[in-house]
Image (tube, rainbow, N blue to C red):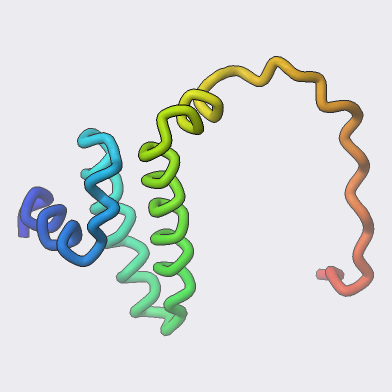
Length: 93
């Protein structure tokens, strides 16, 4: 299946792909295919779900021109000191 055919088929299932810039669609197809294979191999569909969640959030940002402008520009505000991470006793490896 060609990338164009895959993108067309995926657009039917995920209509929000139409909000992404056209140059992003091939990257989505590659990442979707890889995540689907990994998920199937591991039986962990959260891998694919996380990928879809991220791309859908990206599509939402592209649908909101003001939000896209804000998130694409430099951060000029000084947001203060970044606190040190908290130690979590449950996160021992």
